[in-house]
Length: 283
Image (cartoon, rainbow, N blue to C red):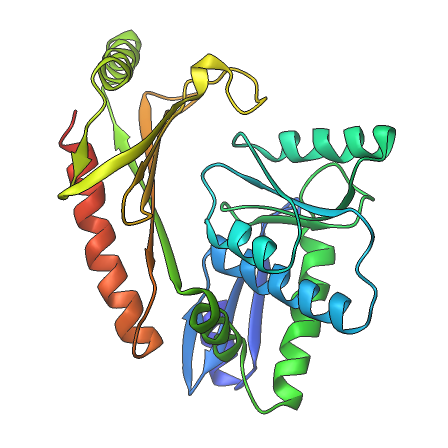
């Protein structure tokens, strides 16, 4: 309904939040058609804009740092790298981002600039220990206004980001199992199999990194999560749901070059579907 109203009124953007206003979704009207941004793309719009504006105006805080999650897009760390900012990855859940905010306020080792997770949660400022859709809606409106003044849209800005860093594309898949103990036991057995015999390659791409977060690596709490990184910079994360008999698969790929955004996204979607199928076939 919101998208239809945006089209009927020829509005520039449509922002939606969930009932408690901590998650935010975004649609932009681009060349007469709605473009629905995913959570990773929204996060990168915000981070790139913050870096550009703060650096251009000499307002980047000293020791500024960014926090994201291990299942979110690698583009966040790439933007940080380009701008000389440390990027910290935490486990899934914004509470872990909140923990770092508190830690840095105590030890003053870093200044929290921005935090984001792929599931439409973002935060600027330290007024909250959780994601905040209200303050982020204000930021998105500011970015959209700047684009409007330049005769462009948020989709144009996203395209600029991809042209700078390459096209990053992510997708999630949930694999459901029988309810009750049977499904949970099956999932646990599959996770154990992946741990003991991790794949050496996927889609003819060598697995160059394997992380088992149950070992408490990267100074993170122990968690039943597995991460695989391939030679072509693709990333796969596998984790069971904490509440239901479901297995969650997160995949991300990187295409250094593309012709148009539409064709690039289409190519990436086809490739990532094959990657998710290859991972699911392991079970």
